[in-house]
Image 1 (cartoon, rainbow, N blue to C red):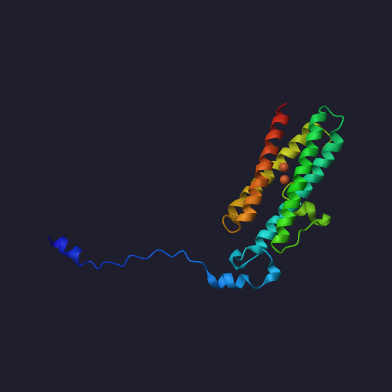
Image 2: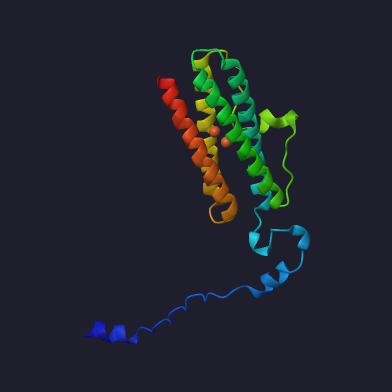
Length: 190
Ligand SMILES: [Fe+2]
Ligand SMILES: [Fe+2]
């Protein structure tokens, strides 16, 4: 019975109230000012510069991929598979579309899209390639797509819920890169 008495004497700690779901009115008020920041409001958080840098490196990657696929498209014509040469052009155009979407998002975030050709290959995650042989081209493209998939996956995980619009954009692009890699894997096996 001693135990029961001890228990009865334990002081009950007050149950913590769950945080209320209320809007931050001060931040909403701040959003009415700083109009030069466009879509970036106080809620955006301190990661804007880091995210712009990651997007610019991805932009460089996409532009290098456009150049590599274009090179392969024109030089593979007349080789064993004209169909694959045509598909290289399809990929080049899709990578170009990715580059445009990344550049547009960088501007929305108040950054500057970096199209400087001097530093493109240094900033790109994936490599340029000028192989003359069709199999070597397919392999170089598959490597580049896998590099893009890995880097986009890492960026998406880092962004998490810090910027849902950028995350959705990158998830969309990631899906395309996975399709590209899947096609290239099949062509490599042919
Ligand atoms: Fe891409
Ligand atoms: Fe791709």
